[in-house]
Length: 380
Image 1 (tube, helix red, strand yellow):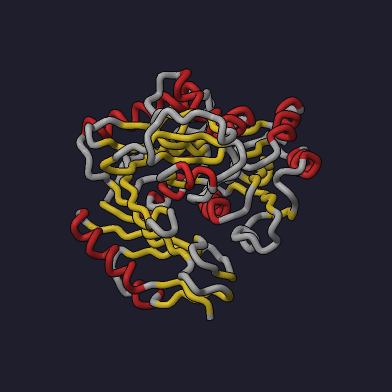
Image 2 (tube, one colour):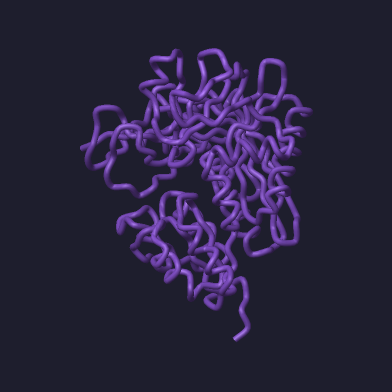
């Protein structure tokens, strides 16, 4: 039978079954695409809605190889996977997007930063750091980042003095100069096998300083058209130089002098793109599917102003999750909660998000603040 991009004939596997996988499935359903998921957690967010779920390790060579051998295409919703198995699958004729070599580069922050230097991509100055004997050419404070294994703000520390550094990570890492920035921005860019690219509008991120996670994002960002164009051009430049197929999130610092510096990149749907489900003409999840299946990329224009609020577990609460204030925010216009299906909450765990849309950013910010003050994820 001829294979098509729709229906049961094409076998697509996804490594990872978290909330990104859950929302990818929701987009796939609209295109009649059936996704088969691999995740170590039998109660992963995708478990109840996936076409199939195999429980197993994402980092074990044999598990990933066996999972992929009856698939036509493999994609990921997390970088920490066994890339050796993915390379073997490629040799056996399975398409893997994003490509294994891209995953290997991006999940190592040291390789990432070296890639920026080698390709004239603007980024903060850095040095590799392995032990206390290494010389740091920057004044304190500096930023200390694990090369591998960090996520959602973990594996990153602000180092204010030599004592802090002695008490910081001992694993291979990098030290960055601490950049005074005006804003933190993000751009999501897609690229298919035909080398077509398309960007979503730039978003502006506001962080929860205690959790070191994005609390709000707003789109369109409050930046000049010139900065918007420049950020999108850098994102396209990166995905083209990686020769990557799929979706790439590019995070920036906008300095007080108006310079854009690339902070980090992620080769998959990303937290900074969740708002696109409601306020863009195409969601990041549909765009990812279009890219990896070599379909025409969709229009990414915004049809309203919008914000996203991450729902994270409250401090002091661990156990069965309860969404206090959920019914109240459902009464508000333009408010769309997305719960990730995680039965257990704990402090700062990502449990869902809320998208807020309105005619202008003033209305969006007002609604977003009301939502923030109304809903809490607690244990019950």
